[in-house]
Image (cartoon, rainbow, N blue to C red; front, side, top):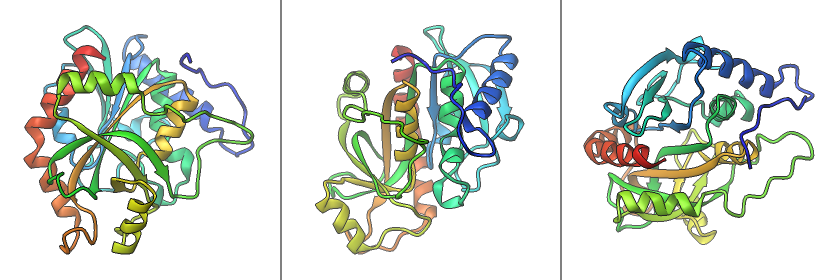
Length: 277
């Protein structure tokens, strides 16, 4: 599947595909007409890992791009930084995302993904901070996403748009990631609506359904990425044990702390991936 330049009209008052094209045009104009090769969306706990991943070509505050707004969650950056990797490719690092629980709708949630595709990206890395169901995954453990379960009741697709998600999370890219870090395990990510943390009963339900990781992002973006023809890799940072696993209470501070503590490992992982993606 090739990169899609969005042209299909939708019935919404604001065409989200046209808006992505507009944002991509601003981004590529700031790059002197160059197009990006790969994009990364850095979730909770990941922004610090964006430092030193290549020579910065341009850094743009997200609100300067059409359709974007400031992140509302602490621990997310607020820029898109384009770096030239050691391999000479252009990588766009989105240090912030819109979450579904903000109430802006699925199109706002996946706007960064659509913009990256319209700006030329062929591969996408989605990251997040999440709760882990596997007691062996201590806080600070990165886990590859093998599959996902979307419990939001929403989709970014419009109309009769049928997208195959059988291999949504590229097996080939997971092998590439394990070549960078052979210790990486993998699991199934379950997206809840949020913003409240899951109850112990909901976590048990997720486990019964086959989930290993729980959070409030990523699945909707994955659907949009496959619609756009992007090859997709996902990495969850286990920031805490999911509710009921240990009996400990949950709060966002521990999410940020886990990201800080794992910063060196995450940076090494992303740097290694950008050498080969």
